[in-house]
Image (cartoon, rainbow, N blue to C red; front, side, top):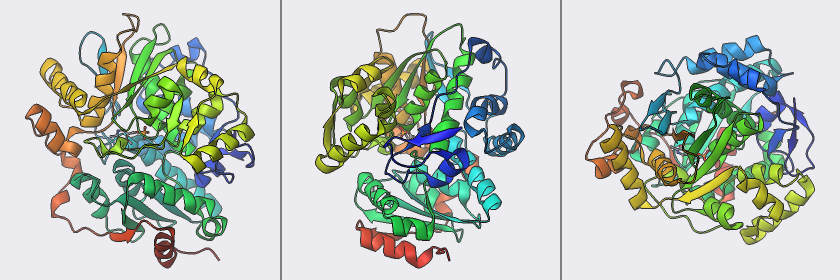
Amino acid sequence: MKYISTRGSAPALDFEQVTLAGLAGDGGLYLPESWPTFSADDIRALAGLSYVDTAVRVMAPFVAGSLSEAELRVLCEAAYGRFSHKAVTPLVQLDHRQWLLELFHGPTLAFKDVALQLLGLLFEKFLARREDRITIVGATSGDTGSAAIDAVAGRDKIDIFMLHPYGRVSDVQRRQMTTVLAPNVHNIAIDGSFDDAQALVKAMFNDADFRARHNLSAVNSINWARLMAQVVYYFYAAVRLGAPEREVAFSVPTGNFGDVFAGYVASKMGLPVARLIVATNVNDILHRALADGDYSQGTVIPTATPSMDIQVSSNFERLLFDVGGRDGLALAEQMRGFEASKAMRLTNAQQEGASRLFTSHRVDADGMNLALRWAYEAAGQVIDPHSAVGLAAALAADDLPADVPVVTLATAHGAKFRDAVERATGVRPSMPARVGSLFDREEAYTRLPATYEAITAHIAGLATARQ
Ligand SMILES: *Cc1c(COP(=O)(O)O)cnc(C)c1O
């Protein structure tokens, strides 16, 4: 399988190369040259398979040429063996049509473990083959950071520098990052927002010298391998609810458009997805883009769902590329315009292409709290605020055929955001034992101003430069 850039001028790469590179050299994001497809019989054959067996079937076409099926299986068994639920991503029924897909049974209690546990192992495998090392730089609104750090802590061919916005992640999220004291783990708290952190990371990738000297690599959802790993659970859930005979809709609490883009990929591969509901909080750039074609950056408003407090949605570029006719040079031009003016209009083709599968819903604090309470009172489920944003959008989708089940992706465990959960429901979720004694451990991080010079000087001082 070959991968091409959304901006049309970076070389096509194989799976191993895109995994290590993250962002394309022309500033674009990598996508498969064409979508592999599963026939109805291929999908039927997934019935009853374990999560690992499903993962191997679904991901095999994407890694072809870089990993054998046997190698892929070994990595999946190691990655998903660390999950605390035998089904890895179990489905829970809420009422006659609403379902939750629980994605938070990994080591750091958010769905990002599903992709990052695998990505850490992919990095290790490919670096051992090449006798090379990498420096991971990432920006996190909370959950990516802890999941990435857990996945690579202590691996000697990898340094990881994780930027988080100072004071804007929850205590649990911060401690899950800063209490990992492995020598290759470096936490940086910046005086700025998540978007500032993400812009700094992008600037490092666009700095060819810095990027080459430290062999930079990405763990944000701009990394294709992450999205690929997330495609699996759409298949796993839909097959359990009757695919390919029956269509299924998904409601996805969204920030960077990564998780929901994986649903789009599943649909492109032939999974009968009736609808993808993009659920945003009041930071609603994606809702405005999908509803009106207005992709313009607002200022970030902090909410009880910090992992979605985002006003630039990196992976949206992948959708615009695919539904807009895959014209990389035209998209590069459009994105340059957006980067200069912080606003753009979707083309008609992009808007029509997106509206075939996507709808969107903006959920404010009241809507989120109502959904938290509904889950608890009507179905006995204590969910997290991000999942509640997804559920609020799922409950509001009243124009779907009655026989289509609606699956909300439950992206975090309630214990990760227990203050907000307790305020809405009166129940304080307890911390699962696998997290250990977070609040007794020592923390380590460096606080820095959100300037390119400060961050790169810090990284250059600690990372191992290549010869
Ligand atoms: C990251 C995250 C999201 C948003 O996922 P995207 O892939 O950025 O759209 C939603 N909920 C939780 C709990 C998250 O950690």
